[in-house]
Picture (cartoon, rainbow over the protein chains, first blue to last red):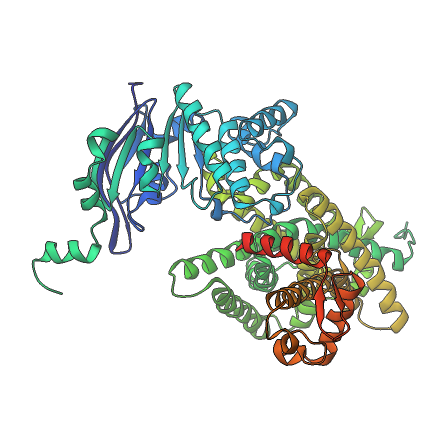
Length: 249
Length: 381
C-alpha cells in the first residue's frame, strides 16, 4: 500500500448549490512533487481542505496509505495560506515554528527543550535562524512563508500539503522553497503544492494535477502538462457553460 | 454560642473581591481580544440572566449552584445561536450578536418582572451590581463566619480559570493563532471555542451577583486590549493584563471613596482611563508616536521633493522663476509657513544654500540625500 500515499475517491464538495469540486478521483504516488494547477476558483484549496477533513465533502473521501485521515494525522504536514492567520498575534518566530510539534505532543503536554531544538533546526533549513526571537508582526511576506514552511518541517511528516507557498514571495524565499522541495523529495517525502505560476511548473515539479472544478488530468509532467490540457483547464467558465447547454447566453 | 464574627475591614474585603473578579475576568478576556470576540462577553454577561431566571424557576433557590449551570448553558447557547445566524451568511457576526443578545436578555427581564417581583433578582443589580453590599452577604459554616460569600464564589471561579489556562494554554494559543492547523493536528478548535465560552459564562455569572455586568465587560475587554498594545508576547500579555486589572480595581475603589460615587462605575472608568492612556502614549503603536511618525515622514518626503524640484530645474532657463527664494512657493503650491519650515530644515542639514541672485542651489550632501532616499522610495513601489 505504501507506494500510493493518497487515494482520493469520488470527492465532491459543494457550497450551497454550487459544486466546487466535482467527482475527483486521484492517486498520489509516494515520493513525488506534485503541483496542483488551475484557474482562480478551480477548487485547488478546497481539494486540500476536503482531503484534510477541514471541509466536509458531499460525496467521497480521501484515504492515506489506505486508511482514513484520523489514523495518519502525525504523518501529514500542512502549510496553510499565509494570509489565513493574524500576523499581529503576540508571539515569536520560534514559538510559531514550535507549534508544528504540538501534533506529536498531543493534548496537555507542553513543548520542552527537545521541541525547541527541532524548531531551531527547521528554521536553519529555511535560513531564518537569526529571526528566531523576532516578533512575527515584524516579518515580510517571504519571511512569513518561510516560517510556515519551517513549522511544517517540524511536523516531520511523510506527506506535505502546501497551499500557495510561492504566492507573493521574494526571489530569495522562492529559491529557499525550491531547495526545500528538492530536499524533501530526496528524503522520500511526498509533497502536494497548490501553484499559480505556470511557467515554473515543469522546473519545480515532476507531477501535476490540472483542476477546474472537475479533474482535467493528472500524472507525470511530461505526459500531462500539454497545451491541449492547459487549454481545457483554463477555458473560461462562461465558455464551458455555453458548450454544456448548447445555447447562446 | 453565638455567631462568631471575624472582623475584617470591609474596605479590604471589597478590594479583595474586586481584585479576584478582575483577574478571573482578565484570563478568558485575553483570548476574547485575540480572537476579536470581545463583543461576545457583552452578550454573554447579559443573556446569562435568562439562564439564571430559568434555573431559579426550576430550583426555587437563589443560592443553588444549578443557577451557575443554567447561566453557563445559556451563555453557550448564546454563542451557538450567534454562530448559526452568522453561518447563514445573511447576517454579519456583530449584527447577529446585536440580535440574539437583546432577544434573550429581554426574555429574562420580562420573566423577572412577571414572576419574580418579590425575589432578590432585579435588573438594576444585574447591570450595575453593588459590590459595596458584597461584604454583608457572609459565608457561615457551622456557625462560624469565614468571610463574604462573594470572595469564595469568585475565588473558586478564579481558580477554575487558572486551572483551565494551565491545562489548555498550548491549545488555546494554537487554536487562536491558526485554527486550521489546530484542526489538522487533531486539536478540536470547536472544543476549545466552546470551553472558552463556557469559562466566560461561568465567570460572568459568578461576577454578576457581586459586581454587575458592566464591570465584567470592562474587565474582560479593557486590560487585555491595553496589554495587547504594549507587549508582543502572549505570556507577558496575560501577566500585564492581570496587573492592569488589579490596578484598575484598587485605584477605582479609592476614587469612588474619594468622590463618594459608584464603586463598580469608577472601577470600569479606571479600566477605560488606563486604556486611553496606553492607547495615546505607548511607544511605537500609540497614537502620539503614530502622529509623530507620520509628521516626520511628511517632512522627509516634502524635503526630498523640494530638493528634486530644484535639481530638475538646475541650470535651465526657468531656474530663475522655479527656484528663486521669492517665487518658489508658487510652483510648489505650498503655503509660506510650510515652505519656511522645509527651507530652514534643508539649510540646517546643509542640503541647500541660496546664492547671491536669490536662487536656491542644492549642495553635494543634498544631492546625495535626495538621491539615496529617492531610490529607496522607488524600490519600495
